[in-house]
Each structure stands twice: as structure tokens, then as C-alpha cells.
Length: 105
Image 1 (tube, rainbow, N blue to C red):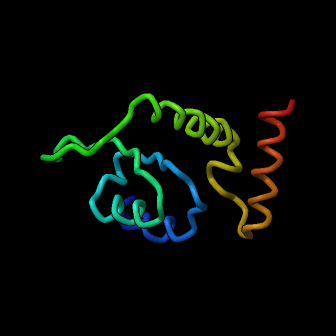
Image 2: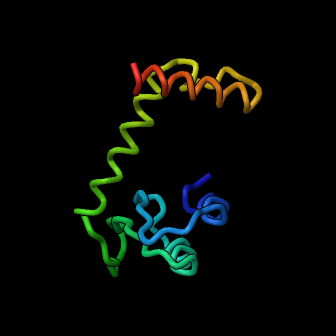
């Protein structure tokens, strides 16, 4: 499934924020309108094939890199990357243990 089709369900759960950073996969007019209707400003890099390039701040977008590095560090744990657990609570416990080992120790 494409990122922009799954964005509708994700944006319904979005907490209140001023700026929302997104990947190029979320660069569609529908996603941008939904973000703006929630009261946030979308900071999404435009796709190469877009005729009209939307407003985008590369300086603000650099902060998104910290989140990407966090997910990459958690995926170093095989159990997290392949999701062996069947139950969501067991998977969440494994993520918490991996985060503790990665960031605290």
C-alpha cells in the first residue's frame, strides 16, 4: 500500500502540533490538505515530478533525521526488525527492552 493512502488513518490519530515533517512518499495534495485541516503546516519535500513545488524548509527537515536514526538503531535487533512476536503487547515489551539497551546502557 502506498504511503499517501495510509496517511489518512495516521493523521486521524495525530496530536496537536505546529509543523509536521514527512517523507516524499507523503507528498500529495490530499495529505497536505488533511495536515492543514488539523492546524499544522506540512514540511514535506516535493517529489521530482511535481510541476508546482510547495513550500519546504530543509533546515527544519534536518530534525527528522534523529527519528530515522532511532528507528534504524532499534531495527539492529533482529527480534524487532522481523517481528517474531504474535501479540502486540509482547512486541511492545521487546521494543522497550531494545530501547533501554540502546539508549540507556
